[in-house]
Amino acid sequence: MVCSLRAVFMNLNFPLLKPVRILLFPFSLVYALIIIIRNWCFDKNIFSSTSFNLPVICVGNLAVGGTGKSPMVEFLIKNLKPDFALAVLSRGYKRKTRGYALANEMSTALDIGDEPMQFHNKFPDVAIAVGEERIVAIPQLLHDRPGTQAIILDDAFQHRSVKAGLNILLTDYNNLFTRDWYLPTGDLRDSKKSYERSDIIVVTKCKEELTMKERLEITTEIAPLGHQTVFFSTIQYGLAYHIINKKSYLVNDKTEVLLVTGIANPDQLKKYLLRKSKTYYEISYNDHYIYTIDDLNEIVRRFNAISASNKIILTTEKDAVRLMKFQQELSGMPFYVIPIEPSILFGEGGKFISLVKNFIKDFKEIKD
Image 1 (cartoon, rainbow, N blue to C red):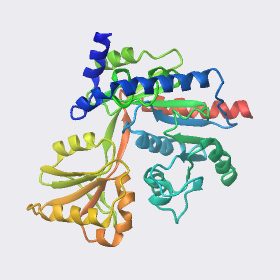
Image 2 (image 1 turned 90 degrees about the vertical axis):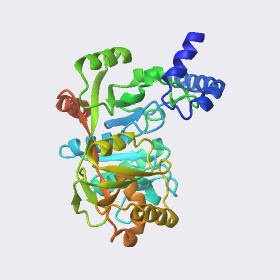
Image 3 (image 1 turned 30 degrees about the vertical axis):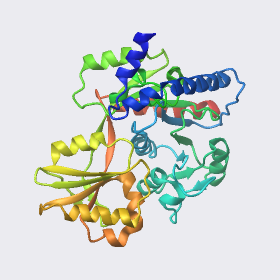
Image 4 (image 1 turned 180 degrees about the vertical axis):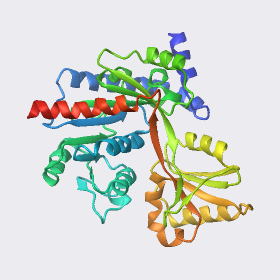
């Protein structure tokens, strides 16, 4: 038992929080017991799960924090929408409204949440909806968009009231669920055993030079079941663009950057700036942070304090939708947004998309 606890503590990847988190270990045991009992109730049909008569694809994870769910949802939309009429359903975390809502031209991040707003901005022809109770929201979504051929559930793996036909589970290369522990000592919000419910497992945020040996070691550690396929992905950054006029900007080794983020895990972006920029300074807020005019004034003050002539402010796409309420103030500033998308390693991007497309096609054939 002592060795087991020691392994748990050594695997936690939060050095600043580790002392506090270790003290909270008894609470994590209680939390683990609760989610194990909850999952058992679903497995034994004491708690019911509802299936829908169309392809439902769930993208989720076992841990809190950023594993790349939003980029994965966008990756799926981009690759599936030419062939299928898609809809995306999110919870709409940190929005100021409640209940079901379908994104339209009047929607804001405060109405539907930052991530759904980001999806709507990038894919205005795709139905983007939010609703805390997905089992209630799905029929409403299908009523509004009766031609929908497949639904993508964003961050719904642990919400078992809806049974998805295809579950895509993401786990961060730097914090694999196999090495994690339960909240609040670790980051797990669901049982490790729940990975068995997934159909596709994607190890996200890998280094681009991941070797076949490392791939095999991680795959062996995850121990996929016979019906599961494991993929590995890395993050690719696109060309930065101005938050208002959309003009592009190439970050280079002469650029000094003030990085402004309110996301769960900006580590990959910071590593990117270490490679690409001359230097960067950082203002970091909590995930899904709602910016105020005082925050904007502080950002401007910090930016003006940088003495370099070649300097910009850089933020993420998710932050950008929460900053757009300051359009007038931002229009004259060198305020840029950097897009990201996942790239499936080892040349298996086609295989990944084929698995998802075949799920939709096979479901439609059985239905027809």
